Image 1 (cartoon, rainbow, N blue to C red):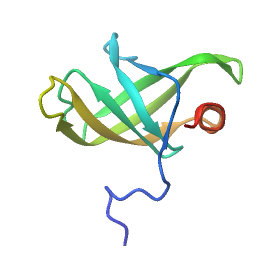
Image 2 (image 1 turned 180 degrees about the vertical axis):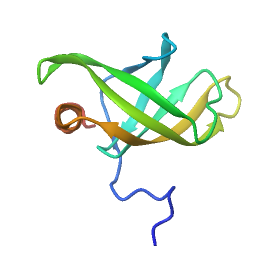
Image 3 (image 1 turned 60 degrees about the vertical axis):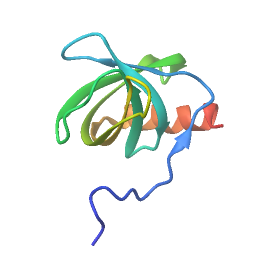
Image 4 (image 1 turned 90 degrees about the vertical axis):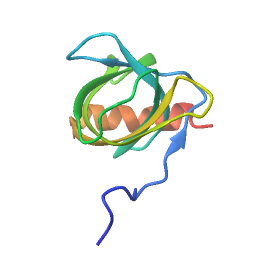
Length: 114
């Protein structure tokens, strides 16, 4: 049985800054660090409560599938303070993504993989 924190797919770092918006509470949530169609890691200015679910929008550098954002629901699996900085790394499992959002994530990875 796979541990819930163990990812099946290797995450891809992108060569483009992707800002993430909290669509429920508003405002910038953080920046995308790496991504798969199943999860993402972000850098943020605040500690994220573990096992909290968020509705997020990734702000794309260009439209993909007719949209400039990727909308998805994600569950925070872990959050760790970055030493010597007031920033946090946080890992999320994507729990709600439409077919369009999944297509956008795949295309984002193809277009901007490091």
